[in-house]
Length: 405
Image (cartoon, rainbow, N blue to C red; front, side, top):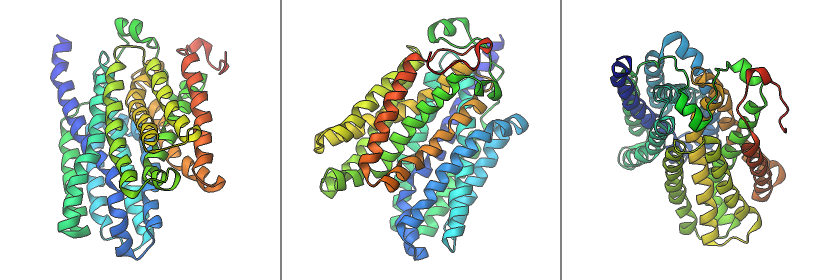
C-alpha cells in the first residue's frame, strides 16, 4: 500500500526533474554568446569565453554543497530558488558593463544556480527508483543534454532576429519557468534501503556511508580518479574539437565543424545506451566498457596518423564514453556508498567535472599543444581501466585498505 501511494509522487518527481534538467542544460549553448558579448564589451573573445570556465567550476562547487541545502530546505524550495537565481542572472548578464561583472554574474551566479539544481534534483530522482536507477539517471541526464540542443535553436533564433538583450531575457524567462514548474512537481525522496534483488544483481553496498566515512575508503578515491579522467578527456575534446580538426588533423573548416554534430549525437547516445545497460549488468563493468571505448579514442588521437575518418572515430568514442559515464556514475556511487547520502558523496566526486574542465587546457598551455594533453589522457585512461577492474565494494570494517590489493 505504501509503495502504491509513493508511485504518483515519484512519477511527478521524474517529470519535474526532466523539465528542470532540460532547462539547466541550456548553459551549454554559451559559446553562441562569446562573439556578441565580445563585440558589446569591446573585449577579446578568449577573455569573454573564460566566463564559461568560471561557470563550470562554480557549477561543480555548487553541486558538492547542494546536498546540505536539500537537507535544510527540501528539494522543492532549493530547486525553485535555483530557477529564480538562474533566470535573473541570465537576464542581468546582457547588461554587464565589463568583464568583471560578466565573470561574477554569468560565471559565478549562473554556474552556482545551475549546479545547485543539477546534482540535487538528479540524485533525488534516482533515489525514487532504486530498482531502475540507470533508466532514471538516463532520463534526467539525457534531458540535460537535450537542453543544450533545444536552447541552441531558441537562442540562435533570437540572436539573429532580436539581438543580445532580448535573447538573454527570453532565455532567462524560459529557463526560470521550466525550473520553477519542475521544482513544484518534486518531492523529497524517502529514506531507502538496498533491495535484496538489486544487491545481488548489481553488487550494491549493504551499508550507508557518510561523506566522512567514504573519504576513508580507497574505493572513493579510485572512483574520483576515474570520474576526473573521463571528464578531463571528454570536456577537453568537446571544447576544442573543431580546433583539433583544423590545426592538428588539418581538415578544412566545414569538415572540422562536423565534429560538433558528431559529438552531440554520440554524447547523447552514450547517455541512453550505457544508462539503460547499467540496469542490466554491474555498473562498474559498464564504466569499464566506457573507459575501453574512451581508450580507443585517445589512442587514435595520440598514436594514429589522423585523417578525417579516424578523427571522427576518435571524438565519437570519447564523446560516447563521456556521456555514458556521467549518466551511470550517480547510480554507481550509490551502489558503493548507499542512496541516502548520494548527493553529498557524488557531489564531492563531481568536483572532478570542474577540475577536469581546466586540467586539459592547463596542460596544453604549459607543455605546448595537443600532444602533451593526449599523452596525459592516455596514461590516466589506462590507470582508470585498471582501477575499474580491481575496485570492490567497500566495507565499514575494512576502511583505509590499500588502493592496489
